[in-house]
Length: 601
Figure 1 (tube, rainbow, N blue to C red):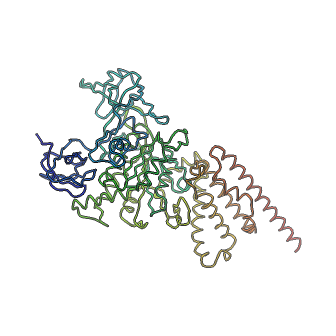
Figure 2 (cartoon, helix red, strand yellow):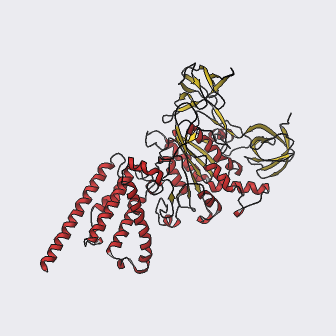
Figure 3 (tube, rainbow, N blue to C red):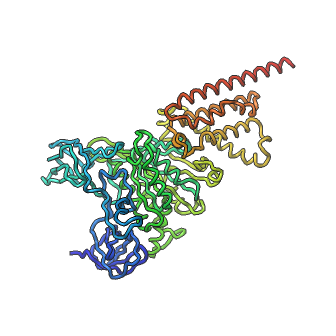
């Protein structure tokens, strides 16, 4: 029989070497020292093992006891997750504050779900029915936005012997009993406990052919994300990574949002925690927190918990995915998560790779991002769910050639490159459209054509061509000035200005412009591209760009981004009509001046 109590041999920050426990396993949770600090086994030897401790180890001494729990780091999943704020190992922060005040004391054990709170359970199966893992046996109206689906856990399959009547139960009350083929009866409760280091199982992956609408025009147009896709948003300090991810979390077309502040600055995390409870969901008008789970692991918290936080977050996201929901997971930032890997590997004496990061940096990042995807869930019925992962990267000095950014770009399929020069010019979102990319354009094209218009791909390509031509012309303008350009190229510069200022810039602080429905995005882009086409045609007929810039419709185009969400159609119709009228008037002027010129000759 193996021993479950050992002793500490040596301590190096969060890394503790221990001995005296036989049969200890990798990633097993241990309790370290007299204060029973939470740790996890990360290295196993013949007679010693090493654990990383998720709490501050100052004051812990060699010789103190270590207790093996026999189970891996796991999270509690069930009703009560939504609206919660956890630390990096799923301890609710409000409860921690009640126990220890503003600063978290060591050795505190708080359960992830409230075992005393009762939830209203509505059964969806009857006695005598057959169930398999993943089948939904009941529902809990957890919030005004999301209904939690109670699923049969793994390892339970057979005939429903008994199902609880509609009523109020805790997450640990037995609500269903299932008899398997061997006659054993299994009790099913509303709560599931799942290890975080391995992904939850599913039936099969399906194509990612539906976009995740973010409400940010530059992203939805030029670098679209697919539901179940992966994306990275690297940028230097002050370029807007956190604000962009906050925008994703607030407005993305996902039913559930999981936001993990992984090594984030405390003031930014505090801003999110204070702001989000007051935000309204755009679809239901209810508080946004009713469909959000926040995981706060700030930069002053122990680094080992930072390493675990993204696994906790993605496991929670997979739980809602398995219920058939589309989940958006925001990780800010994976660079600080990688720094935790670097610190722990350094204390373990592992051979460092580039810039001191461990050699397994790329594989660990891939393990995280590959847990995203759009899948068919387990169970008898046909359910689709997705986890979309968007990670911020904070390269030192904005250097995209550093290891974390490069390793991330080899994995993700969407790259939103934040530009320091754009941010310095107060151009937000500061995403460089010429260096960013999305590999989902071709798979999402059928959706865009069906739901927006058959001309959507052509509009996007034409807008991108104008921006690329503008970049080339800017170098010439800096040398000889704009007056040296022919009228056709001056028209291109003006069209590019309209795209950048009237379409791509978007204020996260404006009550309307903070979010742009995809239908409104399509109409805005169509108006600007049509204006550019008509302007080029008028220039070929002899009109000057200066004359076209006198059009009053330009003021309307500049203000169309603040057209209300529920009435933008009429606004866009009026702009298109006015644009037609003013260009028709210009054509008449050109025709008249042409006739006059012929008469003079």
